[in-house]
Image 1 (cartoon, rainbow, N blue to C red):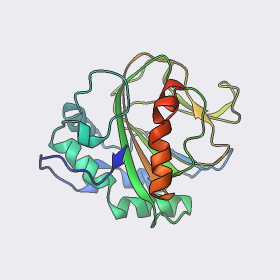
Image 2 (spheres, rainbow, N blue to C red):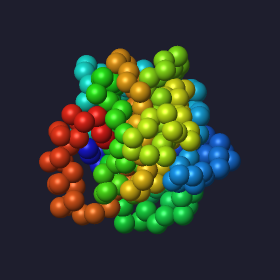
Image 3 (cartoon, rainbow, N blue to C red):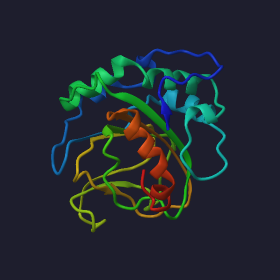
Image 4 (cartoon, rainbow, N blue to C red):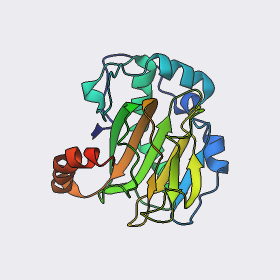
Length: 220
């Protein structure tokens, strides 16, 4: 993963209000069962979503990629700028009642899902809040819908399901029981993960060293 402050060589508009529907964000209730989470179906505004899909990185296979490894257009560069802003961190911190001031925003971008993706997990312990953004315009598939679960063993015992389409945003607070996963899907599933992390360089080094193993297990 890479820091959310990574820049492309492109220039573009950077007004968060043009990208995100903060009224919908404010109106969406924070759910607390079985852990804190928030779902905003069309958080990315429709006009912005169309531009972001035009400028989405040209990734040719599965895997998570940091922005530094990718090429993308100006609207996507503006999105990365917005995601790295202290103002956005303050909004998520206030919504979840968490001080994110000492956290580091990290970004991973994925375009294609493979059969091993989606196994039930809780996310790495360095993550405080995980935020997922979905870019597919429509999602008619049963697989690939992220479920927030009550246990580490039952994909059908879920409290909410996020459809990865239309600029939806899902955010949750990482805990030892923040189980989530999805049924298998193979194909194009455009997603960006923003993680507010805490734990220092040593913890991030451990995370980077274990990432290949976690990827084999279908974990983020």
